Image 1 (cartoon, one colour):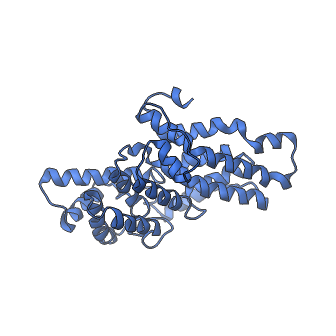
Image 2: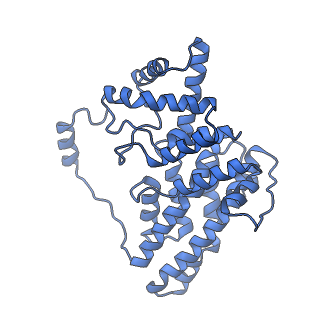
Image 3: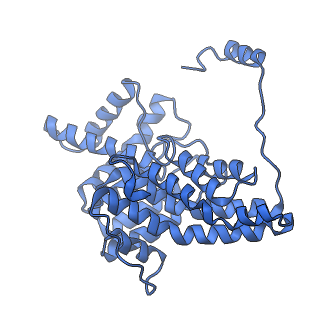
Length: 318
């Protein structure tokens, strides 16, 4: 199916579709159809989770190899760990990149249950949809530019910043980056990778990536750019006054690390995010089934509530 997808289909669309296609092997769906007792739901969910996590690297690697190369995926190697196998199937034989991917999968697994992809998995799974259906939905949430796709948005912004400064013949400095940041904000755009609805200080996942870069690639040109952005952006956003947390989140750094190792297909970056995120959201789905949590139902509001909200917040929709 992946090999038959139209050229140009976004890798995240391919990933979500491929997860859905594997649903025919769902242990949970098959056992539920047979009338399994609800006290067994967690066992069937667990089997689906483990199968999904085991299969994701090969599925993700095929998407990568088919989209950008010849479609040939190197064979699975049982002597390697999860990350090493994934890197080998991607066709990347670089121990530095392998180490990066170990970090990447770990820090992207989950950061709290309230993020959009985790909540989507919760919500869909609460209907007793099996883990395949639930994870596919989770990946659709992750694909949005305000969520997992943000790492792609960040890299695009950084490359545009780099190109603009070179075009103007201006060196990378706190002043030149500050000027570019204000140009972005005054144009009605956001600075991707900064600010977070939950975190109120620098994202520790950002810090771990920064420490990796300081150890393995301190002289990388893009890393130096990210480092200078980190020094000035909180001040700019604080002065701008529209961001409660002006500090960098996980997306601010990840693309730069991947670029350093020649992984330039940034349309694919969110798939890497998705492979890691599956660990966290599926683990939470397991606990939903283990604890027998109920169907989630969103709260409703009336037209009067909307009218009252707009009276109190006349700029609320701007």
